Image 1 (spheres, rainbow, N blue to C red):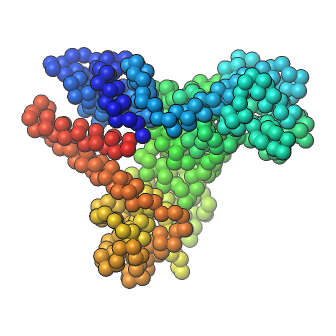
Image 2: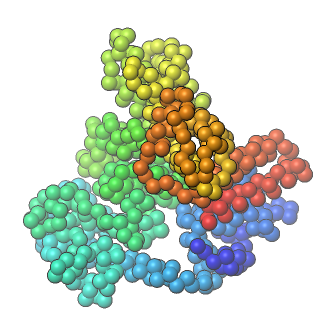
Image 3: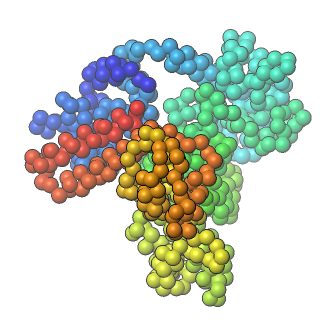
Length: 580
């Protein structure tokens, strides 16, 4: 955790007006300043900047906060990184934390080792005889020397310790080699992790080299490579690399993403490069793992519009957004869409065939993910007959229930009514009824539930000592709210530390929901973490109420100023809670 003295010194040394003026246009307006908001498209300045208090607030999009929030939002970094950037800008030496310094030293050594490895792999690709097949593969893909140099593509030698010997002779320590995921220790010492593979360097959002994706080349002698049957081998998680929080190409794509308010997610490294060659410079890819919540959180730093561009009609499944996880992007408030690639080809194939111009068109024509999933569900049934229509209706209704917004839910109901050829009321009835099938559980007890709220209710049901007050309003998910209300009396009757008796709940569907939570074998979160989450969510509710209040007040009035001060104070409190 950052030293409070450091935070205060950096805050005092930083002029918010000067900081914002480095990014956007700022003009003096009376005793304050107004700036053109860099977070949304506008021509008239709507961001108010208070130099004395060190706070800003945009009346157009609602963004606001202090110097640290501004750097976090504009640079796509976290709080510690923003603090370091502002400290360097102000010429302030941060207080050294011995443990943090040791970890930082290890990290820097590992990153430097990976940076040197990139150069070694890159030169080997361009000149080593054993890399001939890799060069031929890239030429076949249409990648010339400029592309290879721009993306620093390389080749790992086929010997067991080619890279290890080179780096150790250059003074790189054994610890940096293993920390960087470049070498492993065997019976005879260190040996290379990657051998006989085409190497794609992976950088984090700041541009630091953190790992590699290695692609097998069929013509290379597979007996000399590691894991020869795997098409791709990726760096293992390490002190510098966490595959669930890294996206290939994001260091290049983050600024275009923010400018265009769009992110395009493809399947592999060559697809990212192909997209960029075709002019789609907002393309990124996961690094050997499924697209998950951490990736979406990363993308949300730069945009709320995300297009999944895969080479199959099952694009949602390709993104690991299967039926049990599909609610995640909707909970994250993302405009998530699917772009279907022409003829089922991947982006790299299309660019290789000279059809790169079709990629941008496919992205522009992307359709909402849920709409695509609904179409896929309906296409499984013969809707020319009544039984097929009924089955298609129940299947589509299950998808609609995932939408929390009532307006969006009604629009999707209209879409399904037109697609299947039934009345709107029929669709709405199917959605409300919970999609019961004979002898099967109700949809209410089997559909995915809000993850954070599920964790909160799990903790409440375990009834730990010291648990604070929870209200029904703390649950936005209607099923979880109903489940909590059903056990309130049982919670009151239970002694602290004694699990809540859910068997008294009369509704079998709600009881099944509760059983799912009680019988979940994952470790329980700490109540302190849940309490922090609750406070943040309650702050969000208060912030929302004040924003509505501001809409009905006269700009410049005392009431307006008072409400604005309360809003900024709450947003500041929320940010500090998030940093703690």
